[in-house]
Length: 248
Length: 131
Image 1 (spheres, helix red, strand yellow):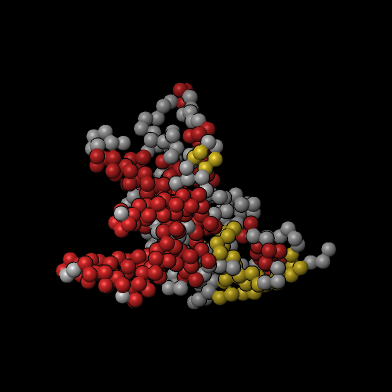
Image 2 (cartoon, helix red, strand yellow; image 1 turned 135 degrees about the vertical axis):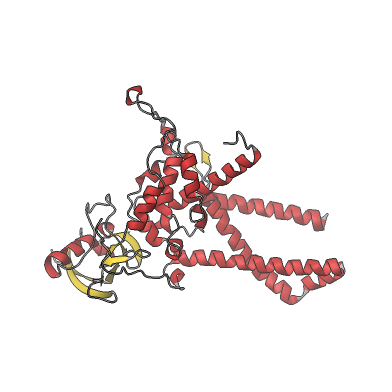
């Protein structure tokens, strides 16, 4: 079988040496089943060992290998080289994040936001394990299940211009996860999470660009979660205004 | 913890032309900018009403009949319709209605809301003008 050659332009940035990032071009022979991540691995193994990028599972589960491919935030493990046939493929670090080296970005901000929304089931009073699990029906599961598919790849943050303008914005993935717990019938932490998602830089910062939901590799719809959270917050505020004592 | 930020990190600022990067961003910008025409039309209409309040109904109608105002109103109508349609569509995307086992699609909300808009507009015209 004859081998095709892909031309890949990768952002290089070594803070100890370079003042500015620049592009470096590599030629990579490829087969039909190779993805951009395979090409990066080939470069690192065969051409230039100094190229730095994150990756782990190479099958769209771990969420580590996100990058901007031809300007669009994508998982490098899910982008086939043959889809770019004949064109130079540009691979850049994800937008809106500080770059540490080459394609590696600083995830600190997102990690903080993730913890902030308390992504675990909160109970007013924990029951001992002997009493059995907290039961849930299939319908109750369906209310939040898509939002639990998030792999924290941060592509939605790279796609969000609001986050690009204001890094304090809670952002798509963190809100989707907050909503996932708010909608979970086993969870009782609404009063804890509501103030977090409804603060100034919470959901109300979102102006519905919608690109977060377009780029999500797991079919999560963060835009929907953010708007649903807005609706919940607004109805909650109205209820407590009309029925100050029993309004929830 | 060790200080792992020995070198300054590189942070790219969003350029003013960020929305030209892809079609979705551009469409978002078109949606937002068309609202400007809604606002401008409102201002013009309020000015017209003030003519009526301070002068007469004829002043108001003459102002509305001015070719420039008519021209702008037509342009504003097109942009307002587009702006409304985008939000009707989003309404369907955000609040799908569950019917049996399936959920309604955004375009169905768009069509339904446009029909409702036509009915409400006709009722308003009928009440205020035709009756």
